[in-house]
Length: 535
Image 1: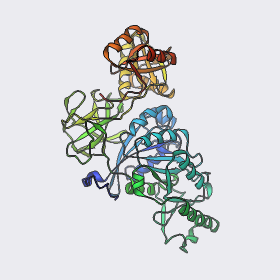
Image 2: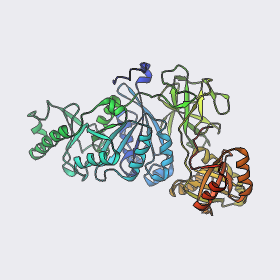
Image 3: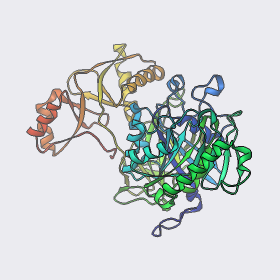
Image 4: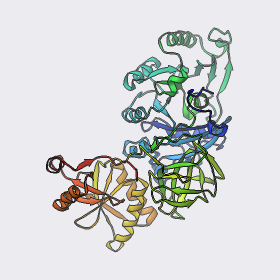
């Protein structure tokens, strides 16, 4: 176990064994497959689902929406809790597709570390770079897994150089691949001087480990062909000379990332990565809040909502708020104060997740992610405490980049549409604006694929066909300022004014010129592209 910084007290054993992390990557790097293998090794499932397999093997646990199953992509962050060795892992699988990045950004506020998955052939891709920047802003420790080494991949040094140059972070190899593509045999574990061999026959089997005394052990020749062995010895020697040694403190501070190589689909390298998370990943960390920071070892329970998922179980029209516990020991049936409304709330049916499967949570500790079923009381950014008026800060809400107007296929069902859209707005799946003039709603999203997901979900979950049409507006900005100045702006620009689902005033723009005009004519008013989810 790593030494905690001297100024922090030791955490209670139950909290110290928690590891809460997200998996981030560009789409198709193998993130969901890696998640499945984590569950396999944690003993949570018997057979790992694959994103592109047939029949029963296809049903991945973390992709539970119909659309995710059909397309083989993740469009919603999902949480999973399971045990590995003596540790409790809370894993959040995030969507890699850039159209759903807002969900991912919010998820990163609820975890203590991130695992960055990189495709061995493609290296650092655009979405990886974007997500890495968010981790960097929050100083999140990052562990890297270079996947798909069983296919033709790039040179190992080239991959490491690219990560160092593009992401400006020190990289230290925790393992080193032996061969690649068809010749890929496995990895040499540089932290423990062991040989890890891949079994291609059974993808759900743990790879075998050969214990050796370093690279010069005569037994190496029994397992590795001579030409690959010479190359391995030479490369490992170079890596040890040229690349920094693993510094656990530097990893925790977010300045260094250890990298493991493997093939998630063949279950190879996954266990070493999990051991790495257990050993080098951070314990639950203090949470930024006003008026003070929340420390995980505090006795009183605090938690915050970072995601709301509607209709996880369509039969029940339920909504589940995903709550990250920031401190204390939570027990089922506890009364917590909902800080925004100042009302007490009895949490009688909290759930722990294994993606869409769930079980009643009798207890949970700081670092855990629990689900609280509710009928719309809980929103993203809400804080729950044992009485103290604390508000967790830093959960972002971004201005949508694409706006379309939305109408019900059946005009008689406009009221139903309003209910459905408000539900998705509270879930954070889209922004919904009600213009001051005219009928209908304007829906704003970050990426075009979200319109498709939204349309299909409204139809499947509410039986309500909808159509999206181009809108005259291209962007939305939240309006802040002294009341008199805001009223002056709204009265003079009624055709541009709308309200979001919280009732906050929004300025809908057609051109950058509209924004420049407001800045010029109303100096006291600010137009903001983000709205922090603080109530």
